[in-house]
Image 1 (cartoon, rainbow, N blue to C red):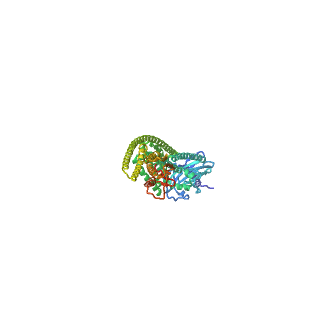
Image 2 (image 1 turned 90 degrees about the vertical axis):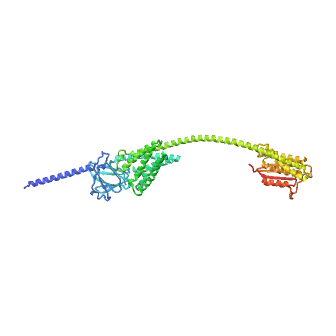
Image 3 (image 1 turned 120 degrees about the vertical axis):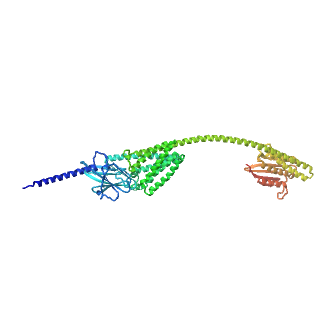
Length: 630
């Protein structure tokens, strides 16, 4: 057989070339895995996955899992990507994992941002949707951050696609590959730290809420509302709210109001700061802050109405900066509360600024200090709570000082009023003494004048020969004397308003008996009543008329007789009775007697009482009236 050596050599060389091509292809294949894939190992508990993955940004938002392989992916060199507010594109991450061992490996891929709206995790070979995540869906592993379990068979190389988009919140992409046990340990620790933080915040807020209900100071209400809003915001920022408290549908609905969720605690923190610093003492800053609050509210509403989520935090950041400047100004002017508030603002401003930088994709400090925000918020809550406690202390000190001032003022006012009372009392006593002197002088002059009139009447009686005229003048004299006797008694007493009836009536009766010179008729007086001087003079007129009539007309047919005068009191009524055992008279016949007319007039119009006359067995006159003088 003839062999063509050249042909054989060329065939041999061709076979060797094919082997080299295979080796080169395999070499570059595994090089590609090492550059853009991750070799899985049970020995490594966790490692950053994003920097060993590839990225494609779909601006059309039309690419699906069926067409994603045709797209050009670029390598990722960072452990976290920040896209800020990005509602108009979708991010695709290609993840390649390799299991070089002889054992099956179970891993967990953690997406380290709980605020991304939509996440879809696909198997690249089968193009099957394995899991969904984000705020719009429930977490498969009940973890705070979305997590996707994967399993690699021995010597298996596998690729996955992660589709991420966020229509409301900022888009921050971070991936970590975990061993299952390490992931659950990390997750338990993370949830415990957040629960510890939230529990401490809730306790402090409830404590100050109870104080508000006790003291009703509105600054406590501002404090409670502000930090309640901060907790509510932080629950969603860290994923606790969507994991434990709200369904994905409710979470998506709440996130729509992100502008108000951010603005509300900032607004009440502003009111808290205004009240604590008593900003009215700085009129320019107070006016500036009030004006910006109006702009802040309007800007927040506009961001919500026109979906300006990319600038919604700017108004809150500017407001916090303004509050920081105002607090610093108050601190320079030795405001007691400003030094406490300044520490709180430093903590809040730093955490707020870092959260904004993280949300905007500029810088993420939380990779180094994961709980910086929680620590700063807790510190601020404690500081502001201490400020409120100091406020209570200051109010108590001011209250005690005010009480001391009030007591001193009250004592001084009491002394001043006492001096005024003493002065007025002295003046009134002097005026009263002068009044008494004048009244006594008046009574004395009236008495003297009456005596003068009585003297003139007696002269006239002596010169008159007409008996009828003498009787008339005599009756007039007795009527005037009844007044004279009253003034004589009043003049001798300190109290000129009241007079003892027995003393006054006995003078009248004695005068009548001596004037009419009738010793056979006995007049008896029974009373122990004290009467007002005005009532006494009317009773004196009635007794004068009744006794005079009895002495002159009741005993013409007999020589001896008895006249009984009695004054009593029953409840609030006085009863004056004049009774004789004379001959009486016919009450059915009308008599033209001036004495009866006077008695009836005095009883009815002066005493406002009633008059009863009985004349069967002698004559009995009863006058009854109600006491009207205080």
